[in-house]
Length: 524
Image 1 (spheres, rainbow, N blue to C red):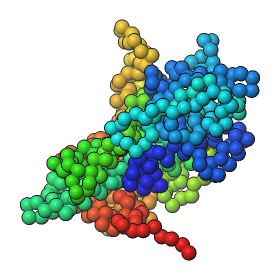
Image 2: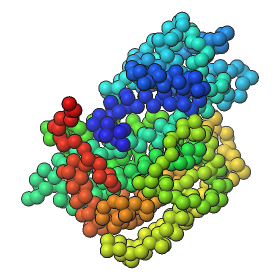
Image 3: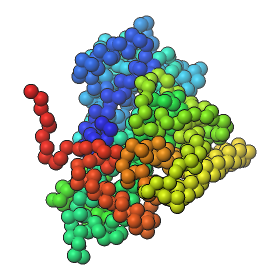
Image 4: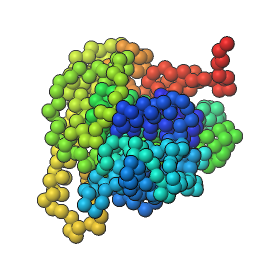
């Protein structure tokens, strides 16, 4: 939620300050002594870390990196360049991957991880690489860092030698989940800006926002934010409860939330019309700035293709685990009022053995829905529709996993001829399954949130018309003209406008925002 409210104001601040999270790698792979040391530094203030993984020639292919870390007695000598990275020039601490193995070392064990305090470099140099011109995030230090025979104490290494890639992946599974806050924040401001402008714009003797096409577009965009929020909230709760499962879950969540907000962006730009091309005085280019800045979410901390490939590679494990999950009370995962245990970063695993609590909970959610009694706002007719939709989710999950099994078996039996000139050979059909699974994951998350919070939230939420509309979508991230029932569209627009004019976040919950121009409260 903190990420959302910062990102909705300025993604430059949110992305710059988000580098603080990389200190948590000390809590994933560090010793108790290292954790105590870095905790003291962070609490003292002034720590500005950066994540130095990518290199100019290798991008996301971390195993191909050429940055070297040569052991020398009780030290390591670091040499090489990392680019492009966030806060490369202005950081005080650098989390860096370096090659410590040799020609006989397996590729997965070549890299080691170091958390370098630049003020503690014993000899050699650590210098910034000039900033890169970017499409958005023009206030961020997207640059690089170069090490030239920089000698550091061996205590700068996190984990064992050769464990760097594994630690890097474990950290990324956490931050990919956190990225949803960035998407939701920019998505909130873009929808708020467009809705506000069109509500004040008079066309055809009335507000432009009341033109049926415009009204439905705004309603659909608002609905997408609600579903994206459900996916984000369930994932954040899952980090506490099912920490070992995020090798699939973190990727599903990042892809889906970013895609929902990105699709909204296209629809809102079209709805805004000519003003999309103008830095009009009504919104001084706010929409365009958020569009540019928010687009980065699908690129960093693992681009969308990288995340989908990671899901695809784990589909055999997901297929094998499907249907063998133990029965659980899923309240802790979905009930927003349920207490959570402390988050333990060291439990994040690079391979979750095909387990995913959201998919596993679906049979129990279907049973809970079957036992639900009708209410004034959610009558038997709507319950019947929701029950049919939930059953369709189960059939869709079974079908997708069966497809994944068949595609994988076919790829093994009929390898590509001639062999592609790349080490990355994941069949595109598996990436398509991964895409469809991410859609399905968000629908199940929304169903679970609705079932376990109907008694806690308002009547708009409890009535479930929004959920029925979301589950009706073929791809929950996409929508078209004429998709929404007019009454549902009206209810969505009314609630969106109530939250907009009432200075609330676009959310299933009531989250109050400061009124425009309000000054920060001070205490005596």
